[in-house]
Length: 217
Image 1 (cartoon, rainbow, N blue to C red):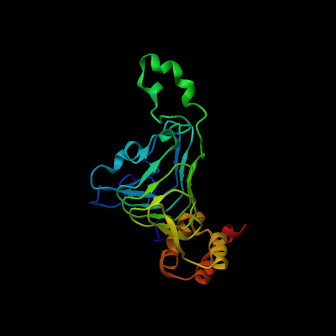
Image 2: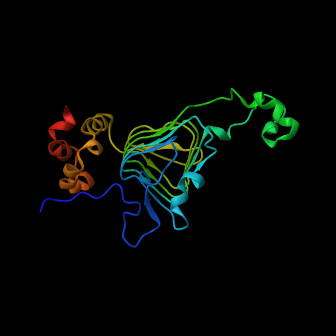
Image 3: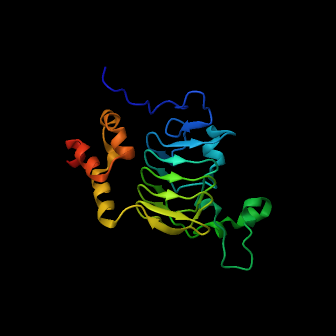
């Protein structure tokens, strides 16, 4: 019998572990896009990810998360709806409270907007990390536990702290280019299944040798 890939449509992929959910079959918001096999882990209620972990998402900005991302408990994405005016004496959003104050809703339009929040493929988020609006996180990055990501993260970068800073990159610029070219996350599921050990514990040359022809053309 040929190797059988894991099923990307199963909500709870780990038997006996309801705290782990695949996000692609979970999310319903048209403003959230998640690739296959990206998961979230939370003992409390992982299925509430859209409301508990994606905050102030009033649109139209999108949250885009790639494939094969691992999101630890308490990872939160703050969206642009959290923004307030800072050019006057008060930052309080009076018009949102109703009454006659609502007549001044124009004061809340045109606030600075950094656009979509975009996460690449194969990104690992440690426990309790926070991602600010409009951040772009590259492929293969690692976000340390408790980090507050206020700026873009390069491919295969490791960041930590508040505000998060680049601790180091996992590979040289040349090797990062090779990894991006091989893009194992775009391989067919059956091909990934046959090369899991190479993907997890091999080297870049082995990954290149294992790549299907479709990955290069």
